[in-house]
Length: 137
Image 1 (cartoon, one colour):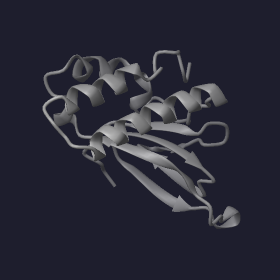
Image 2 (image 1 turned 90 degrees about the vertical axis):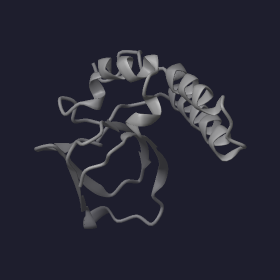
Image 3 (image 1 turned 90 degrees about the horizontal axis):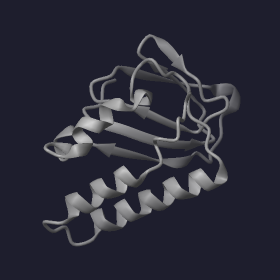
Image 4 (image 1 turned 120 degrees about the vertical axis):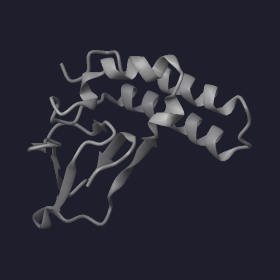
């Protein structure tokens, strides 16, 4: 499969093996993973560990939404959006709470009355995410 979006996902009880590019995406220790637009991935169910309680979220951002913003250029510096990173990132409870809070702010803005400020507010929330903490290094 191929998404036309940037993807930021948090998984809990994820019983699928994800193939990202030509390699397996490792969820053994981490819970947060990223993909860039037009990257190839596939999924295969792990029948040995089937769980009915899959939890988490997925934020999909079309590149056009970022067009003509500073984030459109700076997002390329985050190496974890590339094939070179093939393992999910571990989050402390504090880091996860921050990320979930930012996602809730984005959701509230998106589901509210969209206006000329909504894109700016959502992008500011994305820029506030602590993705510059050297995660994945």
